[in-house]
Image (cartoon, rainbow, N blue to C red):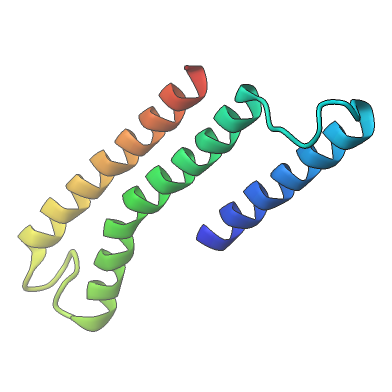
Length: 103
């Protein structure tokens, strides 16, 4: 995800510079505020996604590493608490994406 976001921003900036050079030769290769805001929004959405995905990834690794960490084993209560926390993190992730695109 990090590499894809970096590649997207790089390609976006290159296309903006090319478009500026072709359409308005007097302005040079400057990037407007709207284009900078778009780049920042893409980076923000990617960072929020990665941060919200990391706990679920770690919980999956723990489930693969510990056989007793499941819904029917020894760590049932801990599994249910972590699952409910992860559900709330997913809801926060969706809300933040919605708010970041609306503003």
